[in-house]
Amino acid sequence: MFNKVKPLVGLDIGSSTIKLVQMNETKRGYSLEKFGIMPLDPELIVDGTVMDAGRVTDAIRHLVAEQNSKVRDVALAVSGHSVIVKKIQVPIMSEDELEESIKWEAEQYIPFDINDVNIDFQILGNHEGAESRDQMSVVLVAVKKDKLNEYTALITEAGLTPAVVDVDAFTLENMYSINYDIREGEVTALVNIGASVMNINIVKNGQYAFTRDISIGGNRYTETVQKELSLSFEEAEKAKKGEKAEGVNPEALNAVIETVNGEVASEILRSFDYFKTTSLQEKVDKIIFSGGCAKIRGLLPFLSERLGVKVEMANPFNHVEINPKLFDMQYIRDTAPLAAVGVGLAIRRIGDR
Image (cartoon, rainbow, N blue to C red):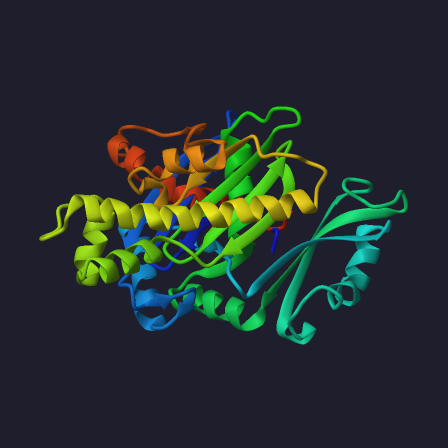
């Protein structure tokens, strides 16, 4: 799941949109080849569960055709309650030896039947975060097979080949690694908040340290605005995005938005507290925020003030070469925060770790 030769299409299948990103590796880094976003009706994927596979598959086909992508191999990502990520300690051994014993190790940490999940791992280093000199730290990932099958079936039915499956939070780390300068000792929280899930990946020196998925996202804003201001779903969506909506009191809207901002801040703070209990690190130095909700009016300054940490909008194309003759640069700037997971997927290659 943590899977240089053949390019892949990064396909980020979210609850409200599908994002397609295709990039080429160059001598200077990466260049953007394809980028598109396809909206999804809210009833098609609910809380990460595919409710209408046929229409989602049609949307994937339409997006691929619209972008005229000829690459058939796809990298996709999963997240949410069906995904478990844990940093564990195991006796020092080779990767081959760990491959043999990982299932037994996983049974101690995975709250699902071990036969119902696909398992993968990444060795972090012999003594990084290890409790003793004869142990090493390993990132253990388990994904429920039904969730994996549900999403890979969408790709297959669209006439494509699911070649790599990653985890949303780890794709943020990939995106970060090619776009940002990493400072010695710096701890950065990569936060991506989509329609239904918020992914948090905390990295130190650019390397994984902690991750958590939380079931809160843009839908929480829409549903709260809809309920508190007695609006239709469509009007609530417009109001949330700052668009003109009939009969909406701006002060009342701001109060509702700030309430949900507070919920988001509380969940991030709770995640930071969890991180501190598993690490000797005292604080997070900065937050890089991505996803559709990164564009919620006033959210980033609110988080910075509430959390006492510098918060900046992610630019997944920061160090990516983009030909202005091929892309609308204003569109790229406007939609860049939505592309974080897609960019992280697009730089994956079959067989890498």
